[in-house]
Amino acid sequence: MLSNFGRSSINLGSCIANIPIKLHLTFFLLLAFQLFSSLRYGYKFVLFIFFLYGPILLITILVHEFGHALTTKKLGGEVGGIILWPLGGFALCGPADGGASADFKVAIAGPLTHIPQMIVWVILYIA
Image (cartoon, rainbow, N blue to C red; front, side, top):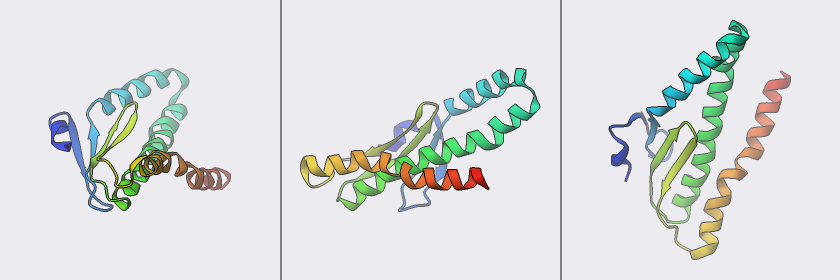
């Protein structure tokens, strides 16, 4: 399932539950666009975008997609991998055993990961 993205993405490995993670090459276009568009605001803003905003956004998207993928695995479904691209990410998940209620659990698992993430990001911001 994930092999279709082989030419247009970079393999980042599979660190959690053997779920392959790939970074789509268009992600670098977004990074370059953000970098060049932030140059007019000065070097401090460029550093903020490049070293703080970008990684936090990438981690947030990755945790969100792991919410979907790990819930699918827990409910007996198959996970082909996670693709990170400029508009976010997507988990390539097969159907979970359990019908509509299992599908709802998979769908809601991603957004629910934002609650603990918000707590962590607020604590880091305050510190």
